[in-house]
Image (cartoon, rainbow, N blue to C red):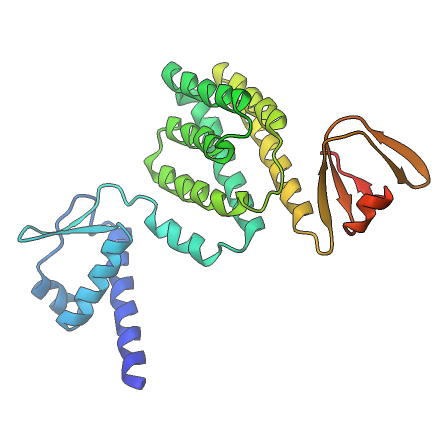
Amino acid sequence: MQRISLLLIIYYIVLEQIVQLLMSGQLNPGDKLPAEMTLMEQLDVSRPVLREALSSLESLGIITRRPRGGTFVNDRVGSSPFKVMLALSINNVPAIIEARMILELGLVTMAAEEISDAQLEKLKETIDRIRENPNSEYGSIDKEFHRLIAQSANNPVVEGMIDSLLVSHERTDSLIPYREPDITVEHHVAIYEALKKRDPYESFKQMYNHLSYVRKKYWIIMQPNMKLIWYQVLIEFKLNRASIQVEKPCLIWLENKDDAEKGVCQKVCKF
């Protein structure tokens, strides 16, 4: 048991040393790594430990090993290292949403300066698809909208990161018991129009409005002992002894499902 623990420690030390070579610039994208024997001497490790460390770097997308060709640092690391971090935090939905906000708010301002007419047209197509088919592939179309914005920023460093966050969107998306295509279309149109004007400030504002709404919605969903009911009919509620008529579908926050039958709610949720 102690031997296994010692090997793991050595393995992680080697992995860290190789990463430091990359971070310090001693190894650059596209570079070929020294031969195994050279690395073994340089890092003072055995062949099995070195190969295990290299296997991990390859699985993270940092290097590529070519049969009889050597080992090379990839030109683009991609999203794999970020996916590892997300996998460890997949149940921390608020953190994932806030990470999206931090990343996408910066991306959309860059996109406002870089986006092409062809990319704008693709954005518009995703809006039309949600509008025409509000109940079909809603999540995947929404994800495509945000991915297109990330791609249009033309920044390979963060493109893989946002792609990983949007993949995790599938996990958070499954928590939503209802859809609001009209609101999504409204928000997406506002973002699209700001990008079309090439206005980074307005683009930031509209993206913040959209993601802030999403964050608030998840916050309500995650409240303990609260139920969300999505009403499609006219219902009258009693709130603080005053009658409230709901004339269109809306989100109602109930303490329990029985309240739905009693016509009593604690709060009408408005964002």
